[in-house]
Length: 275
Image (cartoon, rainbow, N blue to C red; front, top):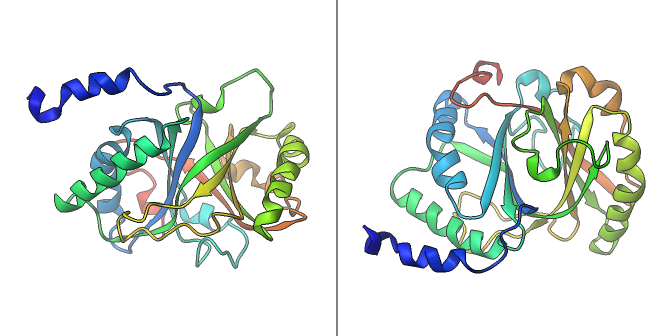
């Protein structure tokens, strides 16, 4: 068994490279199961793919699934989105943290394992990747300063909801200006006194050329910014006034504002509320 699994190689790898707890990278993937496949997709993802295709892989140290029931889907804006067409598409969201400095190592493993899962017929076909991208962590804005959970706790802490926000700068040259506006002016003002304990800010990275063909290449790599708002309240209870009239970015366009609640692992809760 040792020779088959190359245990000695694992011992060598453990002695090298960064192994901190900072989420230097993330996988954020929003998926729409095809009509009639909601239950089967949910059971495949929960019972197999969440573990074999994600959490069991090196350097992916935290993960959580989220769901948008039909009433949550109908809260999304804008109506015409560059991310989701229609804007209600993508009822499941999965978020994962990858150890800072281990992106390349993780990507080599994830491409290889997904090819193996595909060969072994352990990939569910009746789904559409609406928004799937690995992302580099830019910063985290906290509502309560040093008090409370840090961003590396966010996917384990029992937050009541999450809002995915995607903003496109008008040009690659303006994304640094957009980030400066978000981090120094907009987000600190938005989280103050709000139900959002923190907002994590990411920049998408291109998927490797040898990715699985059913996952489309990432769009807006040079212009896009992805935000995850971690809420201490159900988003339905705080959508108005915190998310109905957000200030528009002066140098870009908000392409998606989408609320979710956490799934209940091992159950089919909410599956009957997706349509």
